[in-house]
Length: 107
Image (cartoon, rainbow, N blue to C red; front, side, top):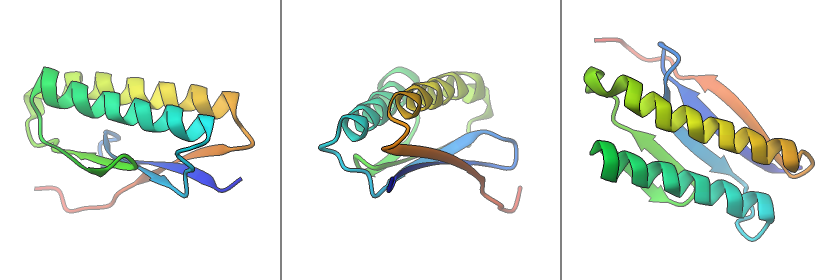
């Protein structure tokens, strides 16, 4: 198993970035994961109107500076997390998901 997805959380436990590492986009698990990532990015952009940095189908990071949108952003990103976990459960030999807490300076 070489396909890995990393959920990056801030010091408050909120997802701020999702990155796919060595994910084969031609595999079923890779294709499903990439589609879920794109769907979350589109929902954040089009529905909530927050800045999303998505330089490729394999990574997205979210501007979490507007605290008034925390619940909405969390709902979309935690739904993404659940979807990715379901893909991982369905294809355990192909995909692994891990979470890391990004240490940063709080302002």
